[in-house]
Image (cartoon, rainbow, N blue to C red; front, top):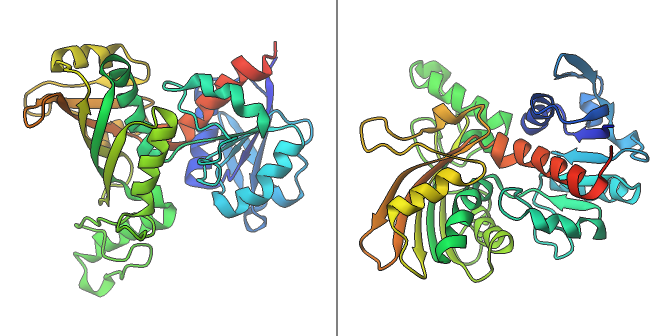
Length: 340
């Protein structure tokens, strides 16, 4: 017996990936609805070998539907998620709206699946930020072994994290570099993104950090352990899809790099590619379309007593968003709805 599933925001990058992944993982769907805003009403989207016509989210009745995957941004989620939850539909939300709500679980299934027990308080589950999701998948098995004291992370985040317009801006600016008459001024980003890096994601906060950096701190504490100290620098780079992170970890006790490598090889959701030779690591281009979080460059940090450095790469539209949401839906099916 399957589920009645809604994908809200089906015409966007993440919504499109949600539909793809539901089909790829053969999620047990009896009925599916693709929702979009009124301006996208009637747009056709693919679900496996089927074509769906989008429906108007404003007029949609969530009564009788089991699970709704939301990829519509915080403003629209604020309006429609409570409506769906009140109708008895379990909402899995990709926006930041509910991530820091005490009554809403923030879940990465490989890391804290037990948190799903709290989802019935609001009938809402939050999906973490893309940069957080891949990092905590790599950190949690190491934390279970040696307990993490402090994390210093620098991210290299692709433009797909800002949506289709950002991807178009990178493409158009890159072409414009070779044809001066076609130069494209920055619109999505504050500075040129082609052949450049921008140490600024989301808005600036009073302490000089950005909202993206704050999210990584707050979400890692909520998902893994509030005692972990973490500092982040988040950077946008001219890559279309795939986020990369250089992560420095300090533990309470010594953890040998070889043992860490073995732990990560056995951990769920992780693929270790770590050869100390040319090309013996994973880059964003190679991770696109893959379910795994890739870990490379595992090595001791000799500047502190109990330190390791790791390189973490993942498809941000998949593990950082759509895949994680579908994995949460699978968890909800097993642990909460339990049909069939």
